[in-house]
Image (cartoon, rainbow, N blue to C red; front, top):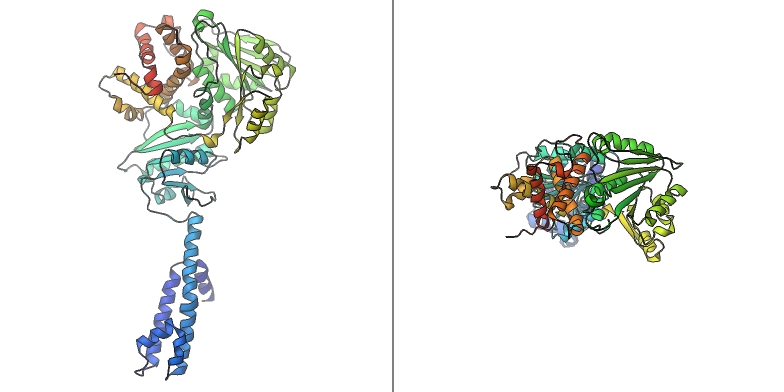
Length: 562
């Protein structure tokens, strides 16, 4: 009994009121039964409960009246106030701890509280969407920016409790740490099951952190079965890199009459380095290649680079079979691989792997040679995940590169104050940031919209009945491989449109075909009948490139003539 009583007080919930009401009712009836004189009516009993000081006015049954006056004093003057205080405290605590659930509708549902959360919240608010629900197993501070629900974001019961079927859009960002991608994929599977009978279509943005996971998705050629979810998948490394290499003027602008090439040097290995290399290979296709034969060069510098080279070759055998690539050991000895002689040398990207540490004389001499070579434009991306190592590499480059090469630094810290200070010192020229993933805005990204427009151009060519208004609905019928091919096509147009101002239509088409070949090889497709020089293509295949080139402005900007 004692344990029950103390647990009841500790829980601070509505049952306290029920017990209090029951005790009061029993005492009320008991008092009326014992005091049967006409002067002790229910009105006087109520008066004693509400105002114990009225006891002084009593003339009869003073002892009984005293007992009930004391009972009324403790119940209504003390316990009742305490109960309501406890209830309000409990409501506040439940809200702060994420236990309270609300009947929200048309809300933005964010699943997980990883490092992308602040950027997504900022972007959602800028987009005018105010009702936001965040589900996380972490303890989050209560604020006016969002409603916080405590729970495992990939649990079906939790997803049902947060009214996933009533939301406007879903962002699956997950929690930082191990098993990020598997949990996010499990969450998508759970949502898909919960919403299978939904009456509405809901946009869902899925974030992945490992390029290997993304590569599995990107290789899928089967159409998705997401029921009522309109799913867009983002790899944060790839998306982060595109913010610099696609959306900004970081890579060199090389026009048809120029006699130099782009040379991108990447310090480090891992997901960020791979994302930089693959994105450079996707977009760096210039008009002067056919005239000069100058290929964009992507160079990796890191210790144990032989192992890194072998891993890339194993993952993309078709690409490296057709590519020129060079391995340079720590002594500077070169081993050059030429493209497969039976197929020809027609790709405009080449690779170089330098097996040395960042501060070595070999690395410094390589950078110096690139700067002094009038036929090359240097860009540097420092992709070490260790912040101190990345800053040290950036600050210890040969002095000759500062101010002459664009330099980007992979940065995933919560604050970039130290980089701002470095830029203000002008010691290293301007340093661009690769990263700041917390500020990446996944909301209605132009990356997806450009991909939708590119796909619409292609699909409407095959079926003229498809209308421009159908671009989005057609998009979510595509396989992930097809969607990514369209986005890669659109991404490359931004730089190409600037570089090809005086180039012919055929020059544009030739570059688009070179871009397409690199894209499908990077997607793991090793054999295709159209992997050949543009001049050797049948006319019907050339016509496909013409369609994209003639609609470049629409694909990039969304402005269609007529």
